[in-house]
Length: 126
Image 1 (tube, rainbow, N blue to C red):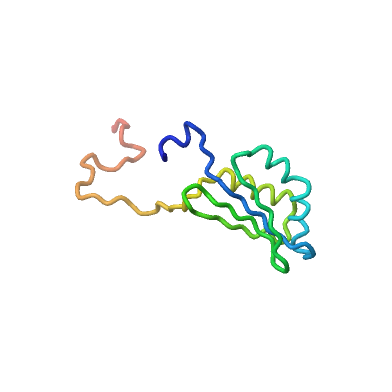
Image 2 (cartoon, helix red, strand yellow):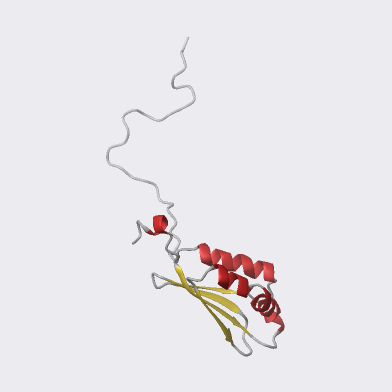
């Protein structure tokens, strides 16, 4: 499935959970987002299940569950609807894989016999 998911557009986000508090000030942006923006986002992405939950007395968060079993959780405390919409689109675009940093140098037993390149390599010497 890994090689064909780009060609067939298999969306990787299966479930998106939006959790908020009804009375908390830190959930104000999330409450506005749920009322105004989330219905249109849900219509645009019918392959994703959107679940809105009330968690009394806790900070709001967005949690995405992907096809490969991984989850990503973002705290949206004191965020505006624009910032929450950016996180929502980021979750929809992600694939759910863990980011891998490739920072090690390649080591070889047989270094290049051609030598290293420099700016004056092909210039004519006088």
